Image 1 (tube, rainbow, N blue to C red):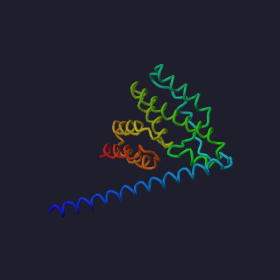
Image 2: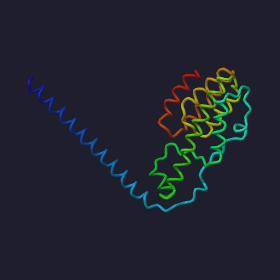
Image 3: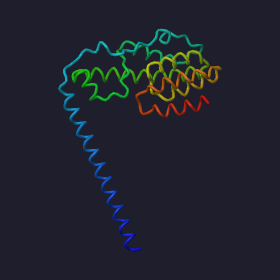
Image 4: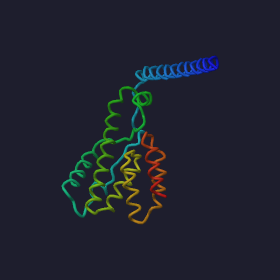
Length: 202
């Protein structure tokens, strides 16, 4: 009996050792690949950014006329109008290393700014939509949220609020479209958003 227990323990310990060594080896290979890729990216020449998918904030959002324009709503609209003068690009899910490999190291500052403008835009759009809903302008909020989703936003509240409004306005079938949009989000938020949308659409 003691021999059986000892033998089982040794086998178990051996398996654990093999697993640990395999994990360590996998992690080491991943780290080596990352640093090799990072090193190469630092020597990529500057490339044209003309083919990026630049985002334009629609005029009907920038010039909207809310029924009850609170100071907060007007403030969000002012900020969006100011932001519309800058270049906006959704680079969610793309690492700086991959950006440098694709567009060159010299472009990383500009690309980071474009992505920052995008993050600011979807944040403002969400805040604007919430304020519009609170003031009773649900139709305008729908337009704002639908635009945000069309740009590939990964702001979970945007999807949930839009799904809510679809339910309230008697168009729950549009949640299916939201699910399709969410499936293409290159973000860690994708699975969580999908789970919640599928639950709300049932």
